[in-house]
Image 1: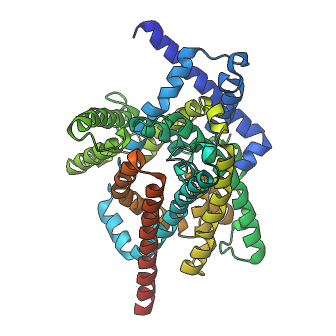
Image 2: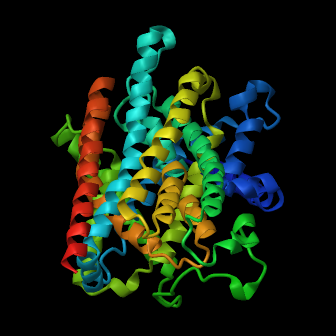
Length: 468
């Protein structure tokens, strides 16, 4: 590559940031976007898609240069590696405290893990079920064998996970990878908007029925949260700790450098694994997570845990995710996705119903008067949108976070991540070469596993209560 190629890449990145700024401005100024709580990256990416050649072809109002589009298509593939690699960095830095809390809260953590995971697992069953049903009724629809996986990736995973789907399928050599990514981004958008709107309806209904336990719920969501910024300098949060001094090395350089080192090692290791075990199908980002677990372990052993601040790490991965989302949305293959619009809508509608029925009734049964609705609404928000959707809906029903839901959910989510380390490789083997029926049966097994986890927590909780 020459200097001009790098300059063109820089301009292409600047264009993406331009759409990000437009998205942030519209989020702050347009009431509809505030009500839906759409991220600036989704708004900006959608505008770029509407004005670009993916919709209009050669008659596009914004005729992007071909080299820009080529870069945007590969950006999600590249950026998603450090984003996923970041997950283990900073874990177990307060190991003794974490272990003590986990032992005391094990029943609740197991229930939260199981019930939350059921909400995501049912979406994959719905997706594959719709695939098999539509194919049986109308074989000429032309659904590819992994169609349906996008529902869980979009709903429970959100736009960031949906953006990663294309690179994963591309690694597996699946020719429909670009279409699948577009379908996943579509389900992510439907889930985010629908999950937020339905969530607010559920909260209002629960308020009328007296099902909310938080004393401060009438305060609602602040205007600053809705518009995405605050002009009060004193109320603006810190990005994190300065773990190093700038006259030696910047804190951002430490965190970003570790993410890139883990990503580079993962890329090199992935290439060797394809030579050593060509039948093993795992994406690069999975190896990146494993590499980061190793780096994190080394930092703990060398007592260098003070170098890491999870808030700084989150800000870096947040910025990378925003650019990956915008790039992926602008390059959605609209024509290819539109062919499957009917099955997409069918699985989204059924997905909402299924997610509701494995969330609210089960949480009411498991937790009764222990903030059952607040737990369910956060699970609903995360399983139909993104983490911030769940947190926002929780804060709408529990503005002062009086309930233990946030802490319990965080620990449950961490345990689910551990389970995923064993479930994900198995899932990928079937995605790479399994039939739709095999994928459906596999996810019945995963659904049953998480149901058993929830039941185990329920019985341990009852035993704990009887012991008192």
